[in-house]
Image (tube, rainbow, N blue to C red; front, side):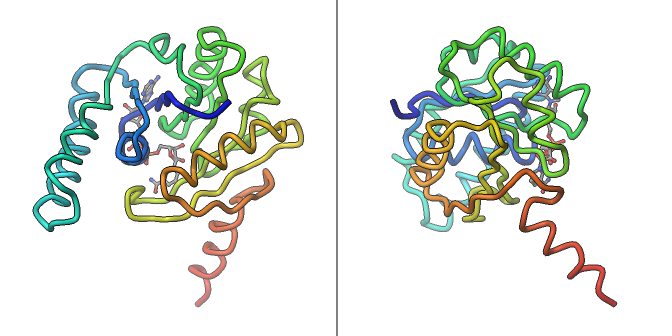
Length: 200
Ligand SMILES: NC(=O)c1ccc[n+]([C@@H]2O[C@H](COP(=O)([O-])OP(=O)(O)OC[C@H]3O[C@@H](n4cnc5c(N)ncnc54)[C@H](O)[C@@H]3O)[C@@H](O)[C@H]2O)c1
């Protein structure tokens, strides 16, 4: 099995970037938001980013058109049910993420891999909101997602080798560099960055 259909929950700063790079790399991608207005704002950000690339000659008109054709939006989490991988990029609030993951867990097929882009919450704790901790991991992107190459792939003790392989292969397929990290506060990058920034 390989990832073919991708879902992204939240089309804010990070979710819009993740949906964009997924669609740009050729994956059919559906992004979910709380309202039509939020969805339109996020899709507008994606169109704006692609238009900027077109103006600078970094994206062709055909690439832009094909990327947008692979992207769809919804306000119903259940519409992500047929995705092979769903990446959650909602507001950093554990109660909200609990609702999102328990809904996704009920809606998605047993093979779907669920991932969170959280920067500060425990991936292990988030995985307990589902019945599939073996098919759960963190995919921590950096802002701005289309430009930042690194993705921290966060394995918990329960993440299966197959789940890790599928997610890491997908990250490479969208042109990212993978660093595998354990489920520790700040993962690796923020754990190094924070003390550095606090240095007088
Ligand atoms: N901002 C960063 O630099 C950065 C970097 C890495 C990871 N993260 C993580 O990414 C996640 C999102 O951060 P952001 O900066 O993109 O936030 P954001 O506020 O820009 O976007 C969050 C989006 O989630 C949407 N949302 C809320 N509830 C939802 C629901 N039930 N269903 C669908 N959409 C919903 C909101 O409407 C909003 O558009 C957080 O977990 C954060 O820790 C952020």
